[in-house]
Image (cartoon, rainbow, N blue to C red; front, side, top):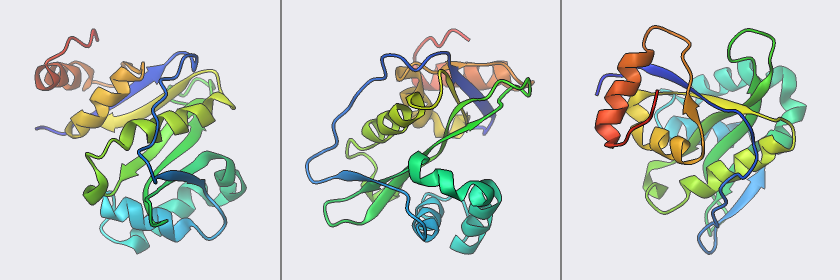
Length: 183
């Protein structure tokens, strides 16, 4: 599948779908020093070639705001207490118009734990955190993450047009997902 960047928005954070974690799994909030855990997960989900590159990006994105990570970065813990997923309930200005919204950011579950019913509880947990800070949310993704995009649609996110790839991306996804998206 061709990789095309896309953006999605949820105009409100009311009625967030709730999903229970499977037995034995839990959430843990970021604590100082957890940068290495974040880097390990994001490297294992192929966002980075190395943990060093992930740590460098972590520093650029969150370094000046590290104190906020304890309230906004969620780790998914397996029954043995190992972090196997993460999602950050961040914020930003999607359209460059000064309107700061919540942002679902850096969502990932390590490959050996995918397909175990963990993604929806993780996303729901991050969105619940966002709802404590913001009235609306957005995210960015790409067509190659079509399974995640399908889940985001189920959580009430809708396409938003910000660049020239909009029609091509959503047409491709409608075909791949076999659902009308209404872009």
